[in-house]
Length: 521
Image 1: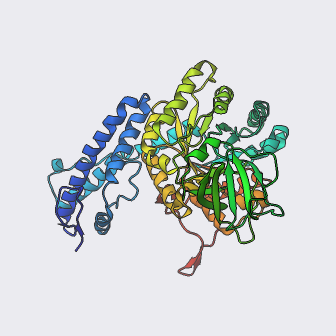
Image 2: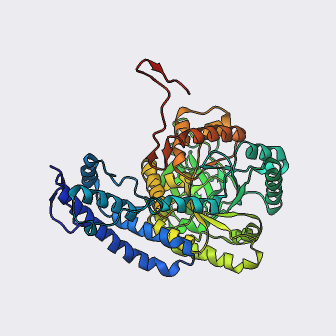
Image 3: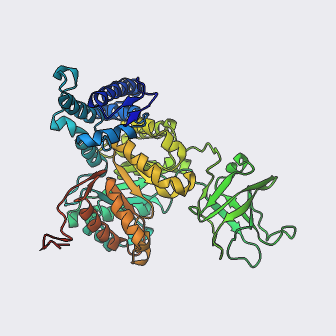
């Protein structure tokens, strides 16, 4: 006997083997979801200026209300009746519930007016249509057989290498990314001119996303102990406010490194025991003690043979509240160029609604410089705070302009812990699908292939799983164009088998049965 005990549903323990009980339970859930969802949506509505977001925001509110419940027992009870287990409900919460309730009502032979009307096919699939429309608004239309877009990060050398950009577009790149943490407006302008030229010659439309650098703490200067080239577990690193122009003082023991940070004020916000990660998590440690010059870090994570450490490597402080503005003065200067040339702004280290409001205020101040179209915004989700605030970030951003989300797995993994990355990646995908917002799957996709020309097995599987997003981003590397070809092939194949969370039952042609050979790879 299956039973449901859930304080969020107005019922005692219920026997879900009984279809009448199952129907009553679903109707209670539907009512609870509608009421809670409307409360959430009413708080959001004043901030929505685009009518196109109304239905999506409502659906997101219903999804959040639904996911307050643990529905696993209910799902198991629905399956023997041949009904949806609600496992693919993200894009269409109420229509999916109504369809299940309506069918179960027919099974129980209740009065038709006591259950919701069965939704039409168009209303049932409206969420999928909205997601496709919003994806085209942000990432552009696509003119080949592949649905998922491919984004490529442009290296600095493309400013002097038109053929590289031409190859990227010819092989299927739909969007290019320019990182404003590097190079200059003159270099960016040269890259963009080549992209527009390649568009005209290849017939491949290509959006341009420009990433604001944001307040990313990095190592500014580093001094190694005499004779050291690598840092090891057990070593100490003094992270200083300032680094004097001299060699290590004799008072420091062997194995003692010194470094400065690009944002010195961070040092005053660190507490003893706080974890720190360097270079996307390759090196890890904790704050051992506080001294007048800065903080002493004890290195706990590095390969046994040591890790190289150099200037410009990123720093992450997952346990510390740094209270950094996501927009630096350099970012504001770069915005002047971006609004006139780019299609999409990549917004780094977004964490709360105030961060969205800050950027939108800066955009409003540059309205006279905006290019002919409304520029889209992509929020890079990189911290636990960003995940926690994601529904509100979506509503505030998409309420004013075309909007998408990037799962920035590099910083995100370091901030939340590698063991939670896959789980959080799934939750971000679900929330964004409920809001009909496109997602960019980023960081280390086909990383070995891009750099060395030979993929490993795990990254091929990761590339295939990326089909559940609306766009996949490749980093820069010598074999980037070839990686676009590989990714294009993988995504085209996978879309015949998978659409978001839904398996597509295309005929399989890889086995023999009844004596008939069906091998057609």
